[in-house]
Image (cartoon, rainbow, N blue to C red):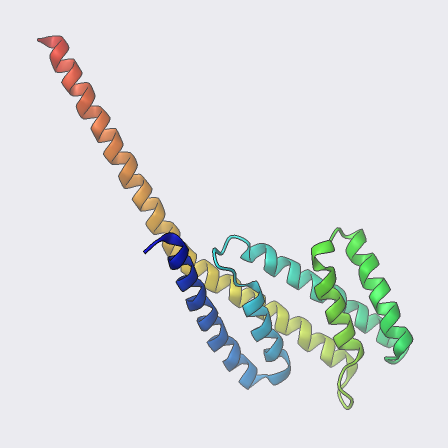
Length: 183
């Protein structure tokens, strides 16, 4: 089986493991667990190379969005003007902190928080989302590490074996040359 198919099968496995873990978190804590489940699946990647970057961007984005939403709440209850102000503030913060990759997620976060469900405390929505996203990102990183660490160790051992084989091949060739020279 070629490497592309193996990577795809591993990606399916990682997503299934993440979905199972995320679903159980969702069942235990419906609000934050939903964000954990979404974050797990958004951060997992086929090769695992960019998982750390994806998790970092997602965490920063949601902290910017949730923080902005919380600040706006203390200024004025959610309204059309507050949503528009939140959009502008998030974009400015992302630009200043050089988080352009995080801007879309941050925008989604501030809008979701600004139009939260009625009957819930506003800060609770922001905290649940931020905590759920952070937990989901950490779980996705752990899954990536566990799956790719084992493969990494296997690949390193395989490369060492090939290097040893080549080294032994060259040593034998050198021994043959030396024995020819001695004759």
